[in-house]
Length: 220
Image 1 (cartoon, helix red, strand yellow):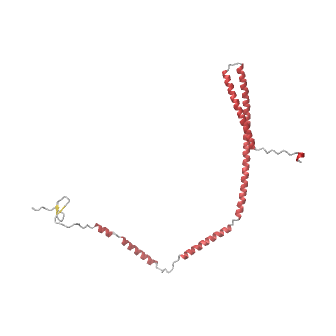
Image 2: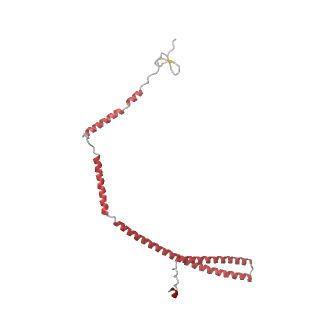
């Protein structure tokens, strides 16, 4: 059948905004290069005109410069059009991409909501409440067990008034034991004289003194 009717031509891919933007930018760059060459040519003609006198030759150079300037103005207009086209396509491409991202976000949120509902079905509040009650009961039972284990056995009953009286008396005894005033009195007593007593003594000035510390009167 292909030999009889031939094969159909493959369909071209649909236009892509990104590719179109690239093509328009490439054309704009090409026009920029042309404008740069025209600027260089205009400078050359301008320098020639400065060096020439008024006359037919200068007018001829001037006509060439005017023609180049017209071309430059035309290319500049085309460049502005291409820049505006590229900007419009970029804005459209940005809007399309934003819509795609929004669609993806909404789909992800829908999937997340379904998963949350599915997970919430497995969680039952009644079971959670029952579990909390069981835990509270077990904690109370554990406290009762600890209290029972810490109970004392064989301890005689003692009157609290007797304990308070004994405690007060014990405090007075401790205060008496802590009283060290007798040590202060002992330390304030005069010191015991050292050495053997003698009939004649001298003071710090070398003068002989008697047993009372008074200067002795020399015998005549």
